Amino acid sequence: MNPFSPDGKTIDQWLSHQPTGVRDVLDRARLIADITRELHLWSPEPWIRQIRVANIRNDTLIVYATSATVLVQLRYRRQSLLSWLNQRFQLGCTEVEAKVRPVTLAR
Image (cartoon, rainbow, N blue to C red; front, side, top):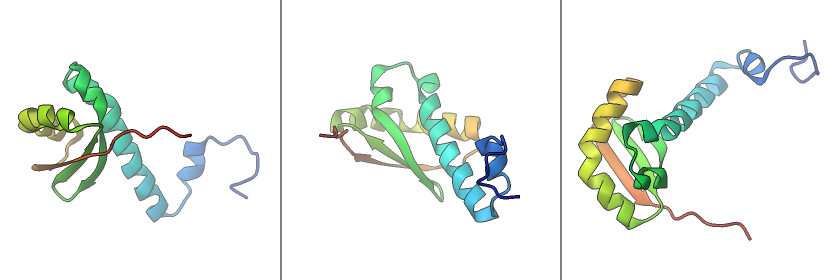
């Protein structure tokens, strides 16, 4: 069967038939997107909407923030965030690497 034929499959069904490497990358991307989306459950504070999870490398959570001010807030709540993430998503993160990545608007 040609996976590109219009046979009514959902994208998830199509992806489930892809090689393992492709599925692994997509599962990791889905996990990172899910974590970023659910951060508001950890804290209702407005600054939390200004951070996003960029990656998980070994035991380090890589986070991007829109400003240094947001990183100050994150620094004080770092351990609480790690505990929540490790419990909710079964991660083994012990460190947070945070960087400022301002949002750029397309021209």
